Image (cartoon, rainbow, N blue to C red; front, side, top):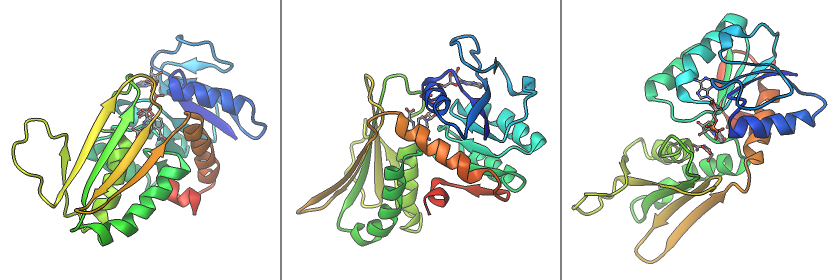
Amino acid sequence: MKVLLHGCNGKMGQVLTRIISQMEDMKIICGVDREPNKIKNPYPVYDCLSKVQEDVDVLIDFSNHSALDSILEFGLSKNVPLVICTTGFSPEEKEKMKKASEKIPILNSANMSIGINLITNLLKNIAPILYGDFDIEIIEKHHNQKLDSPSGTALMLADAINSSLQNSLEYVYGRHSKTDKRKKEELGIHAIRGGAIVGEHSVIFAGAGEVIEINHSALSRDVFAYGAIRAAKFLVGKKPNFYTMNDVLK
Ligand SMILES: NC(=O)C1=CN([C@@H]2O[C@H](COP(=O)(O)OP(=O)(O)OC[C@H]3O[C@@H](n4cnc5c(N)ncnc54)[C@H](O)[C@@H]3O)[C@@H](O)[C@H]2O)C=CC1
Ligand SMILES: O=C(O)C1=N[C@H](C(=O)O)C[C@H](O)C1
């Protein structure tokens, strides 16, 4: 399988470079990064997708939401499936992704780990049982280089809870300057940034007499890279559609 790695010189790009270099059934044919010369890679790196001439089977993206238009244009014009792992997309950008997936297979997930995707499903089952007696809050912690906040995963977990409650919740991002009491329909989302934290998410159900906390810690970035590789293998050969990690794990 021939891979184009978009965002190849970033933290995730370099983890994928290391892992795929040890694989026999996958090869990075070329990379794209807006800082193409930052790192010496064992494959050619271009500063934009329009310079790519190589034939590839799949594009894996860990870059920045601002690159979405060029990624969709590349996928649509060359009929290349896209595994989009970047976070921080606006609702309009997510809509563009879904529209493009009518023509090419696109897989998008804010978190490529098995654990977070299992928790997402679990939350859809337990939130309707607990809601009413329990207040729901999400806390996420990440390294000090992360650009988007709250994390894509925190939003994905919040959306899973909200969709199981007929989208009746109001997201409250932090509580700074708030002077009124918490309302039942609030879903608090809180972001912490520091050091080298890879990625930690807690969903808290706080009741009058007990607290349930569901935690996930990524111990290294390898877990996301292995998920992206699994997603790429899943996506090649699939019909045009919008896929998530749930489809991969089914
Ligand atoms: N879905 C998942 O499981 C995971 C998603 N992520 C997301 O992946 C993205 C990248 O994460 P990191 O590797 O930690 O970030 P990073 O900042 O270390 O790397 C991003 C790379 O993309 C490049 N880049 C930025 N804008 C670009 C553009 N317009 N065109 C081409 N290249 C561009 C940068 O030069 C950099 O080398 C973030 O959005 C992050 O939240 C990160 C880890 C796991
Ligand atoms: O930027 C990161 O590092 C991560 N980003 C993703 C997110 O925004 O949820 C996933 C993971 O937690 C690491």
